[in-house]
Image 1: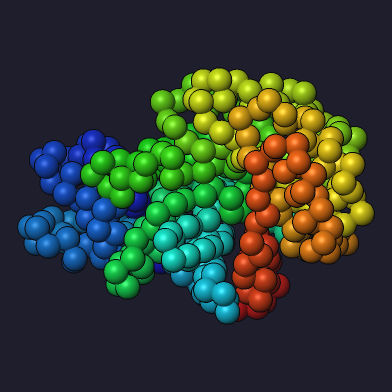
Image 2 (image 1 turned 90 degrees about the vertical axis):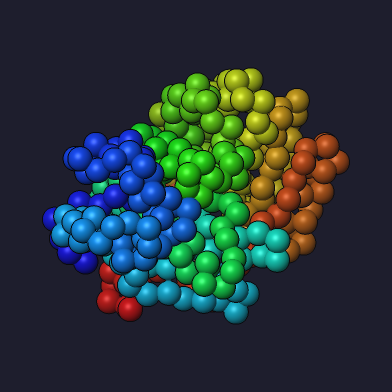
Length: 347
Ligand code: SF4
């Protein structure tokens, strides 16, 4: 990748126009459409642009994406994991979860993460920097480009890869608006899900945006002492404050919040915990997503019976619940694992 060159992936049509001094607005819109709607991998494939403009783009700008593929792994269940290198030598992971009726892409928002959740490979590797909006969007464009060749298209984007999305608020919001843009991929905000470990002030900020985006909140425990043990962010924004922000989000957007609950054997998987979780969420517009933990440290995953029993308690309490399908374990699917391997010399 050519270092030091700028790139266009993170710009709206008006921004492209103002950067390309003297180029008419309709040309800027054409460039945006080629990049985002058609997800072309080269300026040379922007067929309705004049040759001198293509030459100028090639001279001034980074090739279309500000990242390069380092390696891909494909699971026996179809899950695809991509490791991308950034221009400064950083690396991020992106995961495609193909299903019959949808293609979901899980994208990263930071290199590393400062939140230090105990069960997370990314958290263990520490925080390096925020991604730019262009680097976030480019993960989508790269995979979309690849899928196009198979006649497929991305249907859902989840901001659940490396990093805490709401700690990189401006770039994440801009990327969502770029993905939502009518001249681009035009992905409805309801097809975008932003996850958070619980940054209460930013949840309130998000509620004020004019975006009907889905919110997924990582809960993982229903008592402050327990939660702080595995998620240090809970010391800053304890459960009461977090849930008040979530209620505000629901009130402003009328969107159902997905509460993520990673089940850790012997820690938070007792039926009593399920009952406390049910009581906490009763009356809230919510859905619980139970995630059998993907062990990266000393934590262990509960048995399938234990997980089913947990779900049954919630069902009895009429809390909508699902158990996340385990995918890609053969390709280091836990967030941050592949990058960690690469940093350790695997490629
Ligand atoms: S789980 Fe998410 S918020 Fe927590 S350390 Fe990992 S990437 Fe960061």
